[in-house]
Image (tube, rainbow, N blue to C red; front, side, top):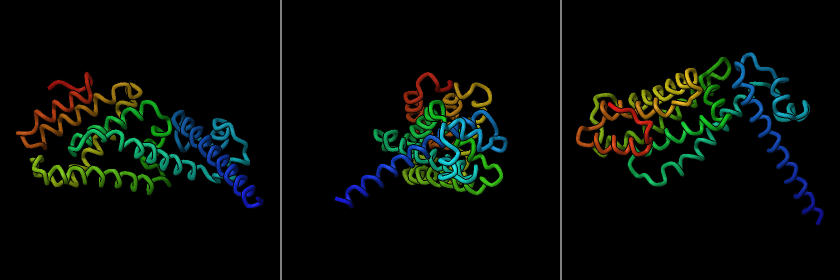
Length: 226
């Protein structure tokens, strides 16, 4: 009986701790959207999070720790969206298209994803985490492109790892431009154009029209005409 009560109290305490951490991550994400990471203060984050100073310092002693937690949570949310995004697709390139569209949607609707991706641009002490983040994405994209290559769909003299890095950098650049110009209202335009360029440049000619049709179907009116 005593052990059961102790377990219940411990579980309740853990739940409260997770809720507080979540509040801090959400609040900090909002702060980092409004001002540069370097300019934001722990006081700003505390106010935006609606938690006490003691609660915040219990979970995070430094601003860098909060930023790293946001980057990790951003990864968690994106990865959680991958399986639903690709559930209806077996083809590697169509899976990549679907994942990119899902991330576009998260960037428009989820402040934590936006903040995490912005923080992963690698400012100061966050540079190491940023490098790991990009390396993970380049590797994941490369695995799917490698399967595409083995299936005979690629027609490019550029190594798969460089193609993968190019796609990740193109997506990153599209995100930055769309954020600066339209607050990401047209981000899907940038990304559908990225895929059209990739299809024209790197996919074997016999398969290009099929992939363009899939692109147009997936991105709807966002897909750019040639």
